[in-house]
Image (cartoon, rainbow, N blue to C red; front, side):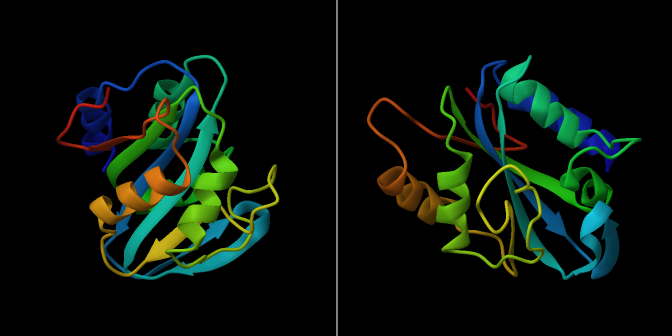
Length: 165
């Protein structure tokens, strides 16, 4: 999975700008994982979305690069589950700190498998979501653009086969 993830980042052409992002992963087999203080959890087969924001050096590109590499010393909750999941897509919105609204919008359409995951600095129940089948990207695009975006703010939706601008 590591080589696949690193080549995926090269094909995305993410910008080094601040913003909010969603990473879509696939889990192909039921497995149990220990996630820091959140303890042990079962990850059923299906798709997982992780929502985060990147406002430090290197912006979205640097943060996504961190998440696609396998962390030797876990820092974020995602670092604990990342080695068990296959990266599929990244969705991002530059220059907007909207992680909370993205999480609320996603929670309305998906299940929260691990309460508190990725939401230590937010009032959300989680920033990690589960769906048994692959999310319908077109439906998410429409729903999110209607609920979150203004005419000046666009969300870039990219798969590992596409470039992200």
